Length: 277
Image (cartoon, rainbow, N blue to C red; front, side):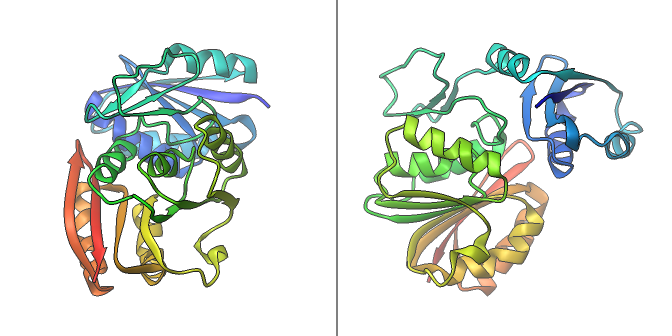
């Protein structure tokens, strides 16, 4: 299958906002460049009208130049590799692809091969959640990873000592990619990845930790379902939303019996950690 590469030249202050907007119209991966950002989408899902609507929202605020070209799948992989850089989180976690050399100086090294999947560690919210995970108890824990993408958060959870991880996503390519990455990191035991939503989890409860890096609207709809599946004393980290959205989500969490532990920000993005009372 071919892919569409959208190259945007834009002020750096608008890069993260445009990434969020493009993700809403099915763009799946992003590579930040010196000029702005490159975004990728499967060719059959490319909608020129939707793209122009996104551009129109911001072109009065800042100069935007863009171009579109088609990439064959093998060229996509070459493009990814030429732009994919390692990620470091608090000098403890290093995220790399198989074509990078390992670095034993990091306590936790995650191998995430570049595929058409959001959540390689390059996005602000993924880094925020990983940073939160480093300060939360994982040893022997049962975790749930909502909208798991590449599986990166659950994989870190296992490396931090989690006993089990239940991960799910609504995109088939993401589920396949997560399973590949789980195997690459040798954390398959106790790690389940399936295609579906929180509604497909059934009556399973008693999770020690929940990771939900999605978006504001889904969180508003589903946080109650997450809370019901979290055991007393368990923790939950949510992200995928802007700093301005944090107060409303914190208020909802408190209504659901969750105690605010921390808020964490990176540029204009936010992550919030709760504990269930």
